[in-house]
Amino acid sequence: MTLDVATLELPGRQRGPAVLVLEDGRAFHGSSYGATGETVGEAVFSTGMTGYQETLTDPSYHRQVVVMTAPHIGNTGVNTEDPESLRFQVAGFVVRDPAVRPSSWRATGDLEDELCAQQVVGICGIDTRALTRHLRERGAMRTGIFSGPAAGRPLPELVELVRRAPQMTGAALAQEVTTPRPYVVPAVGEQRFTVAAIDLGIKAMTPQRMTQRGIEVHVLPCTATIEDVLAVGAHGPDGVFFSNGPGDPATADREVALLREVLDRRIPFFGICFGNQLLGRALGFGTYKLKYGHRGINQPVLDRATGKVEVTAHNHGFAVAAPLDAETRTPYGRVRVSHICLNDDVVEGLECLDVPAYSVQYHPEAAAGPHDAAYLFDRFVTLMQQHDHHEREAGA
Image 1 (cartoon, rainbow, N blue to C red):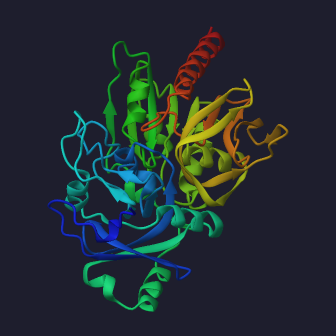
Image 2 (cartoon, rainbow, N blue to C red):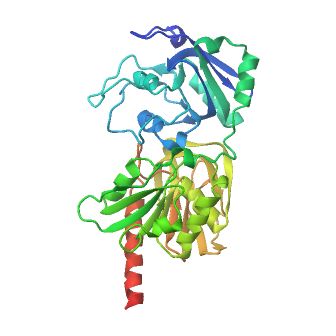
Image 3 (spheres, rainbow, N blue to C red):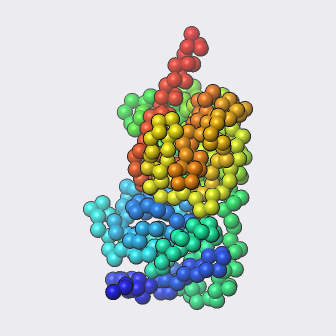
């Protein structure tokens, strides 16, 4: 027997009609899920089988409608420990089979209740596999979810609403998700280093990974200046970190200028995701939009230095255009591509050989996701240790 989720009435849920409309005119009819209303954004798909709460609260998904490729979502509910920011960040949420009820000892609430409370419009009961295949073939595109009275409007009218939505290319979004004011995350145990972290859409787990290694993290807004960075710590920061975040890296001229100031001063630098793209720009490389991006917690990446393959967490729709097979001369010396995605050879990491800087395109904080890449935070510690040693030798 085939279960028609679109007509299924779950206990305590009143589901009205809903429709998902893509900018190319294709429509998927289903049932309302979460808040009732309408929303528009860029349609992207996430391949993770778990970690939906971390996905929903990841600021990198700001202004995106996330399609979950795993069919059954909501079974572990929500809790107060796993959010990566203070609220749900997605523009909309698409699932095939919503859980009837949560079943987890960690759950403190129901996913759909939280979607309603945070006014996230979603849709359920559609063929998410067909939608994902469509996005893989045609590329990420603008979409809208319409439920309640909005779902009854003529399809051409809904398509036109979607096409009027802003595109992700050219979007400067870091200022919409960054912290409004600086804050400090204290080191766990003995403080060994102080790091200035530029919040481009930082996830909560990232400072935690650093504090576990004795780093006091000063999180600064994306509007921070070099003077703000140098004011961190008693004698300036031991390192600078650029976080993940949403939007087109081609728009981030101010942040790139700040990063060049950091590189000019030879301050140890580590960047992830959006931070990787900005390091690429600071070094003189271009960036470009991927057809449908990498999202999920099961992406294979090759560490070219060791030959090891890491299973990694991703969330990016843009990438760095850098030569894969040779060192490149830049204004900051030699640079090489340190990591590549084994699915499509996209640049997944950059390593500077003449200044203390490196970055990766994926999410080594692994929330949610595997822990294969946790060593990258240890590498940051080593980089700061080496820099401190060289500084002492130079002053002796």
